[in-house]
Length: 155
Length: 388
Image 1 (tube, chains in turn cyan, orange):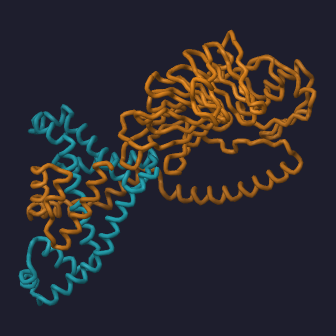
Image 2 (cartoon, helix red, strand yellow; image 1 turned 60 degrees about the vertical axis):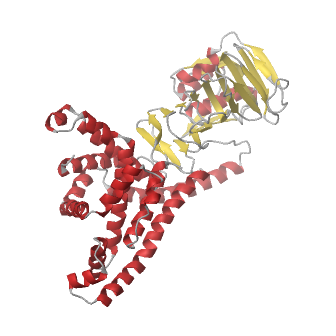
Image 3 (cartoon, chains in turn red, purple; image 1 turned 135 degrees about the vertical axis):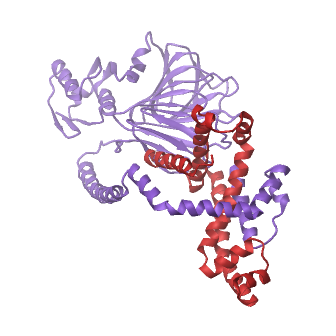
């Protein structure tokens, strides 16, 4: 939609509605999926409204592409990956986070050490700390997911 | 397994590889996406432009984060209040529990004929995962399953199951209607069920293809079964099963009664004992305007012709109807309908038969009506009515 204020309003609407309705969910996973879906639907309400159509340059073809299920799934996938990386990095101590961020940008250890003007061994040590801290976090996220999905078979 | 769940799992794994600076294996991604999409995904996760763009967006969101949450806070039910209320309820629940226990003990010690009473005043829905949810008939709600799909919607006194959900395992929900209330459910095969007071119905969220449609009933319900020749619909109740293909009938099977009654309004139904498998030899067939009375003691059916079935279905319009019925049985009906406890100490009265119907009268008016015909004395104390 390319309009951060409008997007914020939409998300808020969905959130408030779900909260006030006291919708029961079986798991956190269900909430996430439901919220993703609701926000998406809400967006299309706006995108398809006459008001918005007259202003935007979106063609019907564009709309049909972004309305497809595969587009939605692809976007969710990218969002999920980026979100996990962001939260993971944000849990790290500042020094670690800076190095990991550079490393994620594709810089090798030497380049990072030059960029931050620290020694290579510092970079390596910080990276090691970072991986140690991230390991339980990541393990947990994959495990809890599998558990959630696995659980469903019993119900 | 649903695709969306696979996406979450894969996303977590890919994020892990990226953080470890390992190369993401494109084959993994093509398990869920086609090649063109996989290329785009990998590109977008890798390009600096995309990342900085995201960081900028996140930063701008962070700036107004607090004020945005405040905005939301104003629109939702105040949290502080609910916490205090939750505490209040906890304390209240313990208090009521202690009170209830002491009451029950004193009540039980001088009264041996106490029967099961639905203590809860709310309509309760037990979900497949064992969680329970209270249904407020003055509001609406939706039930969402693990994968985020809406399985049913409740508006007022009815609950509708959506048939288009992609549930592929048998998941049972259980609905309990307390004394004094009635409710309606539209099952996923568009079978309509009216539930009378003090009734529990257990049914699958979605009936599976190729499998018999099975539901479990305790209490009274009126079924309007949608026609489906290939999937027989069976109501499992105390001692007997009622098997149909598509008809309308009323089942009244309260364990505290002497037996159960099945009244056929339209189509045909066959009844057979729970401990037998269904076969043409051991079924008892009903035609419209017939009722089958099953005695819990004698374990046999008595088939009777009835000229008018409306007497058996009148409860759906909120009426209490009885014809040549023993007073002791009328009491049970009244208890369920009005959510009261009636203690009758008059054994002569218990074996008198009455005929009558009540519509929107209060329980006091009902008792007065009995007074007119038969001299009885009664006292009402909260929800307990004692007849001497």
